[in-house]
Image 1 (cartoon, rainbow, N blue to C red):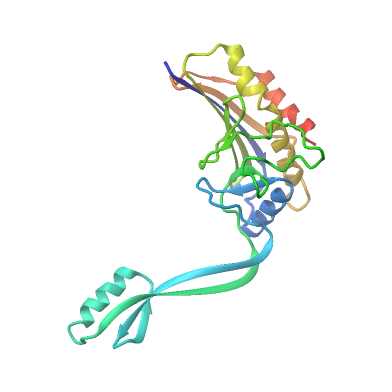
Image 2: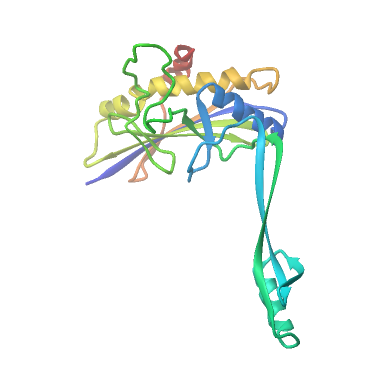
Length: 256
């Protein structure tokens, strides 16, 4: 019988207020500079965060009488209703989409709150955490990245990482997935879902906390609230043992 194991760890960094859009954009830039990209769950490309030129497209719908633009409206449904009404008085009435572009310098806002490592331009599966030569094998050589931001590791386990800008805290969430054909023993579950991805969890925690604790953002990264749960598809659920929580938190020290 196939079974899915889930392990979810939530780390909450408390703060008096939520980051505004400008600070959130600066957070995205600093995380990207350190190798973590903020994207949405249906990403197509990774934006270049920072204070950059931003081009925005807007669409309106023009009302034309005898090929002359009379006025425009926001919605196509409104335009169609107007054309239908004017057709009783004019023979040549139509609507067409009007697209305009504006470009200005501004802070690029995060495209989402999922975190993915920074991959090089030649291979979407090779991260650039490793910046030394010759290249050495690392757990960051991910096997696959799915469009729902699940990272597949060499042992078949998947990880999804999320950083949410909430009203009273910044919440870092690691969700680990393991799909098995049969029920697994506790030791195997811990080896696959805790020990093997520990390096990744430690590195991500280290990067996120280095940014959050700066004066610019001012988060407390030591006194954190942690919630960790294991769950199987049978809906049997239990709290993570204290040693697993401690092991995961200690891993950040090795991510420097």
